[in-house]
Image 1: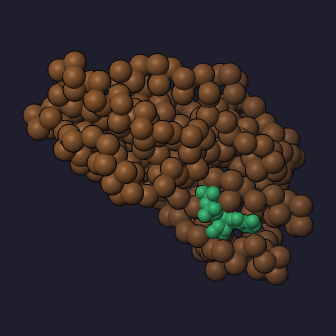
Image 2 (image 1 turned 60 degrees about the vertical axis):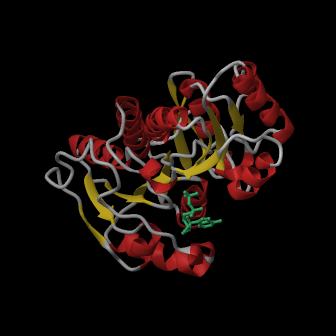
Length: 320
Ligand code: ADP
């Protein structure tokens, strides 16, 4: 009987539990034995490995966070540490491992496959949408919707007080959350790390809007652009409207996953189990043009997850 394990690693995202449920159910359905590993690679090293049952994953598809907990273990870059962790898996006879996380976690999974033959499959789970080899990461859609909800609320108070709001959103070096929340939220400006933004241009748009009688401005700023307080100070030199900064922070990572994220999580989880069943490893799964696809894990860091230049142009075109 095949034995597989599952862990969540790096920053958590909504839909990780949905993946855990899908993997567990699909694997048990195929006659496999499933183990959970708590606290990512740290738990693998410390032998926090336990049998995962259908009861454990019952009712979790709609719960944010991860029942397996997540952690970071920088020491996993050391081959000796990985060897110790791999030995723990082998002790249980586990030869397949599903890793849910970002490209850092995928590095670990890649080495476990290359060095120890563990059939690892990576599932992109992060709100940042910064993993190449998939159009969407699990959690991104939910975070995007949380940002949209926040923008709607900020618009109300921004209008009452005729303010300009700079809204900082997550995404690390990826501007997708900022760009698409700006488009969907009707923002009057967006700043992303992939494109050079001009504070002069944003100031011009704000002045024009005010001259036309518009009472508020929402400018979405990706965290990867730089210090938002410096951006605020820079902008304040150029306009005389009242500017406020709102940093949305970790609320973007919590709450129930959207239907999109739950379906994505389930499709990718089932695919991961199928690949292990076929004896494959060292791969990541993703969704590209509506199809579930597979790539080598290294694809995630050898390629760049590109923010669409044409969508950035659309956002700017509507910044009036
Ligand atoms: P994410 O997976 O979201 O990108 P991190 O970059 O924090 O998050 O990585 C999560 C964990 O993956 C790290 O704490 C570490 O245990 C492991 N990891 C990251 N980079 C590497 C690497 N180059 N080699 C081996 N393991 C790594």
